[in-house]
Length: 204
Image (cartoon, rainbow, N blue to C red; front, top):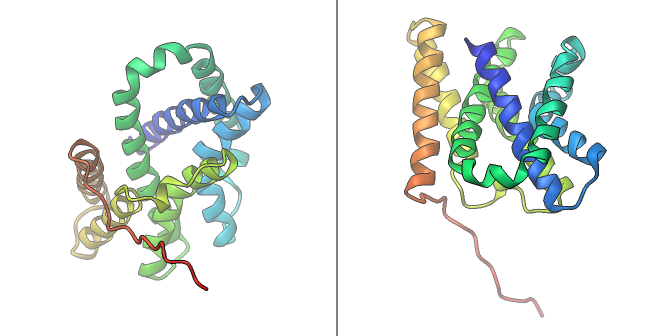
């Protein structure tokens, strides 16, 4: 089930990334690269940091084909995608929690400490979007006021907490995904925001 959700998530991430590339007037190569970075970049950054190989897209090169095809499709039907904005917000939230759980599982498999496991989940869930925004010359969503990284941290914490108390991995994963997804969607619906640091005074 997690693998199916992962495929859905990388397709959705690739399609929304293509729109970001389109807003920067990129060519087809740029569209595909932004899609790959967004959909697969979180896991790549995580694996580089923790020296965990092979990369998922090296082991499964079909992921590159799937995300490139999704990105090109998005470019072709871009004029219709604005009508599906809500759907893609939901799919992006789903991708966030799914990537987070996968990141936690990878860190668990190589016996990293609990704090690093949660960090691994957050990196997997968020780093792809950060790379996309940087390449598209935008302030990353992660660094803005939206509840995004926080939702990833909550997802990872619930997953690890339930497993710690003896709940099966599958049940822990489902509950963590539901809670993380609910937090992210509610934050979008009700415009919940993290506190901002605003500093305007100039030094003389």
